[in-house]
Image 1 (tube, rainbow, N blue to C red):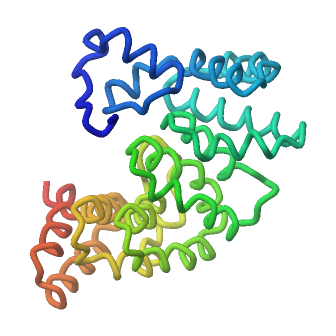
Image 2 (cartoon, one colour; image 1 turned 180 degrees about the vertical axis):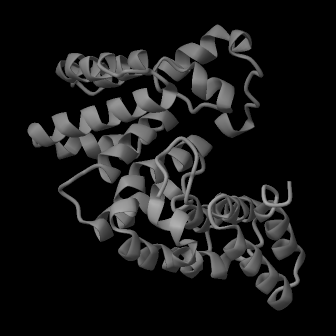
Length: 266
């Protein structure tokens, strides 16, 4: 049912009953406008009440209030990591399991942080557990889940690239896209990966298998990856693009190359 909803174009146009259902966690957001409109603190309060965990509310809200800047993403992270800390301290794995499969997309975003920032898990386990989130049908969950893994990817670049290179042949385009998007040298709403800015060739293990990917979602990510790299290593990007066009002159590769060179050609 939620897939069929188009969603309002502006926050003021969201029907009151829809907003109420979103804040109760009963339905998914239909678009970015709704995603931005959800009151995450109210959603949190409702979630904890529904799961008999109301004692978790104030400690998490305190963490949110301490943020220097409250944006959708910073609040999302504060709630996700706050719930993780409380669940670990209370040995409450049952609650963490509930979050993973929740019907509300923003709750699943918080759940992604309980994996990506969980120090009890090693790198391989984190990637294994985050993969269903990379495949999530909701755009918001897919974006947040790679952000939760970004610090680990940056700290463990070689091992991460080895694991993610296997994802590039996955039948699910969202999982293939995660491999590229999560390793972008500059990325969006996240810290840069200095190692890849200086030596983007390290990422070819991920990029090469995707150079003629049939999915536009993946093509956009690969083009953006190379465009990122071109801001610090333009010669590398031109060389890669020339090679790809020679070896793989498909319309998919041509689209990726055009996107990759857009800043360099300005």
